[in-house]
Image 1: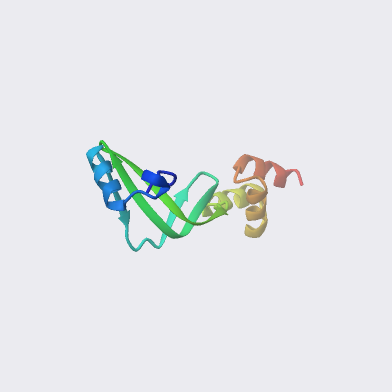
Image 2: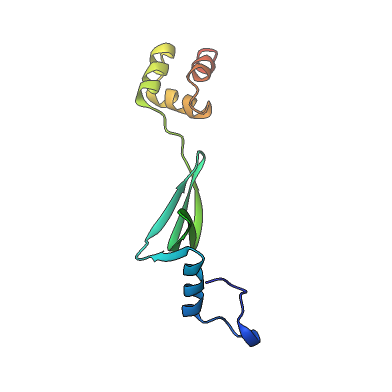
Length: 120
């Protein structure tokens, strides 16, 4: 459970003894079974961990999760609301496709998209 902890004579510590010692110190460890994937969502991307092994360590009421697996980061795509596209179309007289492209280029900023299309 704890890499690098060695018993007497350089041999590894007995796992049962290790569990007993951890329990005496108020540390409980359990492994989640049948985890398919873990997703960590951030503002810019999602981190997807496949083939995940998840261990929960509870130390005096505080839980720590350890996740081991194959991780990949997937950037989030910009989502443009239909109302924003409609507003840009109404304000500039352009097609839906042009309004959508302008919003993507302006990172969803309505005013910037309208100004760029109006000055073109």
